[in-house]
Length: 225
Image 1 (cartoon, one colour):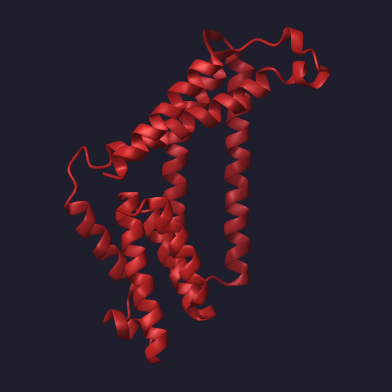
Image 2 (spheres, one colour; image 1 turned 30 degrees about the vertical axis):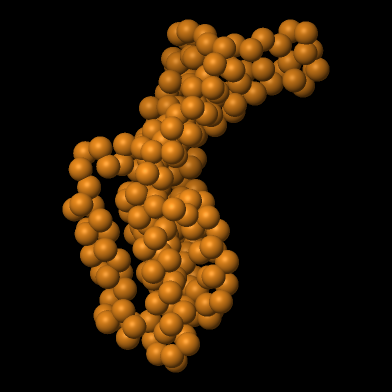
């Protein structure tokens, strides 16, 4: 069985053969499918099928709407997503969540370890460096914030697909995203100012990274089955 990473690589290579017009439509399909909370492998296999349809349409000189048998490509993708999700049970996406958890642990551990020891790195006082990661109130707050943030990002990208936006619309979307980003930073700063960084416990950074890496590979292995 071909690995999912190989499917993605093959998809990116084949997509270069699309025309400019079809490439734009296909990019919207990629965003919609990948942000629809279905299995990564299911998403990539479906995208490969759609890409084959696009290339066949170009070869025959017909529109992709004609090839798919519908003028509403977004609705077509929605039906496909519903079909996949109807075949899932409560544990179907468990491996995906385990893999994502591993990635979050690795990223947050490295970023927060660097931030916590920034002064030591800046002054090159390596002899004062410890391998402990402080799990303080700020870090816990970040972890609690990341879940609704991911949900909001997924919803935004899905909503933005298949939309013809004007220059004014693009500026409006950029302004909204900028306001939300500033608001998020303000909430984080306010939390740290009023609550402070209360150290709850400490763990060895190497142990934390090992757990994160193990979760990633376990989830990745299970998702390939």
